[in-house]
Image 1 (cartoon, one colour):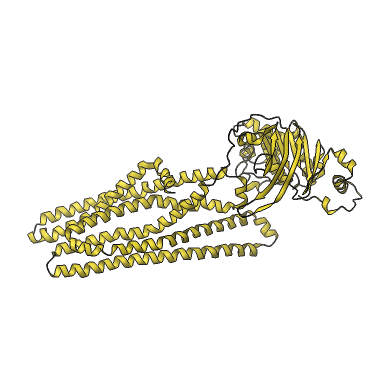
Image 2 (cartoon, rainbow, N blue to C red; image 1 turned 180 degrees about the vertical axis):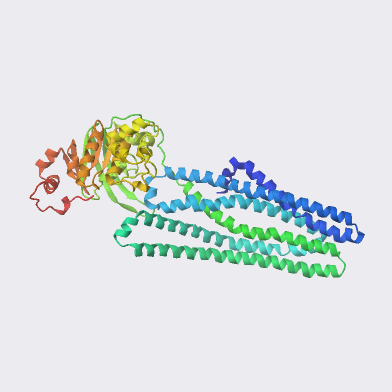
Length: 587
């Protein structure tokens, strides 16, 4: 853990060293005052040497002016160092999260991940700056003070230091519990962020179902858990802070009792006793600073631990020997493929069991069937969002595991029911299909998706901001932009996962024309709720929990008078007969 953290210090080592050097001299500056006071009491006052008293007073003023500028450097450049370390860590954890398997996101809330990227690393930044700086400055002050105390009175210094092991033991005993408490606090605040993100994202559903009370109760429950975790952390912090304060107070008592006796019996002079009290104050100042820094260090290290948890997760990786396969023709083969979803706790039931089928290049296969039969799962397996338990998936006769994921996905375009638009402009969202595309290419893709005229009618045209998840646009406009995105990508394989099921009939018919044009010359896999979207399919597969129960052209399936024909009659004939439960298709 420390090794990785230190690696983020290296690119900014110049600022780090500058911060420590300034901290060193700032800490050293405080050590002159007791020495000057001691000489004044022991030498200059008895000798009535006013000139030396004035000189050393001016010298002390100059030292504190220098200290002022040193503290300016520490406060500014030290924080700059911490921010840069934080930015590097945030960059790396974001990039790493982007490479994690899709299955990881099935089990973790977006808000929780956001908490690790923001809140946790903010505390790490504060620790990265103040931790080493305060430890170093405190170390310098402790070391110099200890030397000066020893020179003034070795006997009294040994008496004072005899109590140090008790303080060290106290810190060791309390550290583990406090670390666990702060780690739990981090977990609970990430849960609050997760609940908040989910609730805000679903605010329309909350209002539609009068769910404000329910969402408030869920948030309150998470909030109470956070309060409990934070209370536990503060119990440890209060015990630690109070214990260390008590320890420093006792040291003053020890110095007053034993030092006073030594002064009474003439073992040390008045100047030495005064200087000793000042040095013991300076000795305890870094101790108090360490107490204040301890919370930052504990919180920062809990943030580093959570950072490590993410960074140690294994990312998606290409198989050994995987290669960039360039452009594919698009023949897709499922060969005895079996798959079930799994999460961090349990394995789910088998969704696909020993499935076999072939989609020839530039042909269209439609998938219909019961919800839970595995239609969307098939779509997710082709671009390797998930890995099959057994069997193989081949494209153009090449196992997808022999291809780099990037080159495989470069050949695949996806249009789904749940359209996702990024917060930004229409131009940026279309260009996601090809970031290097020119404005002319973006507009041509929009024309082919039949959205160009709508965009021009908007006040800012292609620079119109779509809002979060495209909230400023209609459902049809969002879907057309996602289609334009795929036109710009120009993939060889196209997956349409219930791409029009969320639209009204008129909008669906209009968008279907765009999808038909998009499908030309490509291998297409269509998951359909409405059979009208399958009119151009070369073959249709009826998927149930038993696997592929029917397969063939539309005419062949209608002649078979099975599940497909029953569904067809239900959707298209006026005298709709009752259908069996097994034939009802849901999205």
